[in-house]
Length: 358
Ligand SMILES: Cc1cc2nc3c(=O)[nH]c(=O)nc-3n(C[C@H](O)[C@H](O)[C@H](O)COP(=O)(O)O)c2cc1C
Image (cartoon, rainbow, N blue to C red):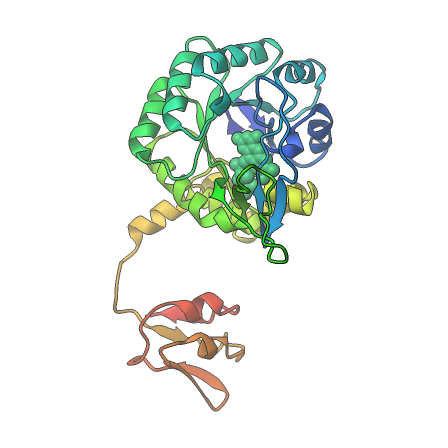
């Protein structure tokens, strides 16, 4: 039997998929709705002290990704009411938008949330020093697990992560959306976001490779569970995230653009993938990429070869080869080893997987 369950922060999750902070977990009604889908864990939207609204519009699909300038929230008091009446069977992490309050106030808010029933707290801030300070203050006062969500591009990642672990953090999520970023409507020249300077933050599939490298680095620096969030949109990208080292896989943009049913699809896809590859569970693939990188032989001498049995003759490799190394002869594609420069573009476009390097 293939098993995609995971243990995380003392919770037994049916799968590693997590709905992270965003509009789909921004109220009692939204969280109730999400709880009907195949989700392992839910993070609330970033909780602010006072209710806040965002200038309109604050979300725009941007190619296959998303721009948002969404700082809205129902406010701390309303969250206490949500926690009082919420009865879902999916673990919930209450997430505090730390960047709007001092570390002392954030700790006070976290204590209030725990009193109202929260069983895990996460602090989110674009300034990682603030996160360290908050965890140092919160740790002696909170009996529940503490998480932080990191901003992209930490200046001193190893040092910061070690300080967070020393302060007592139980798990780390990475990352928040990337920005500030600007999208423009070319019909009018206006910015896509209604924020004061028109800027917003980028999320969705464009940012996946940045998140993957981040997760890979974090899981190499420290030994606490990591939640990879940023750019997951299908089971393949969830597999990449776990292979990079993630225990949990978060999503916001994909369910916003494709509906919450994406969680059911990705969970099913993960299970089928493990089954097909004969893996028993997620532990078999977690961190696999680190082992592959360590085993690899680095070479500048390898050149492309096309396996004639698997080649379908589509000709994409010849079209994309800018060094003119791929040529067709009698309906089959071949590589001139003298001309090939080993760039790898042909392999990346070959849907049949017919290109190897020797
Ligand atoms: C509309 C929107 C609102 C968001 N609001 C929050 C928030 O309140 N707090 C937070 O920590 N992250 C927030 N995020 C960031 C997401 O939780 C996530 O880190 C980011 O979008 C990358 O994941 P994705 O590519 O799956 O969307 C928001 C993202 C979006 C798109």
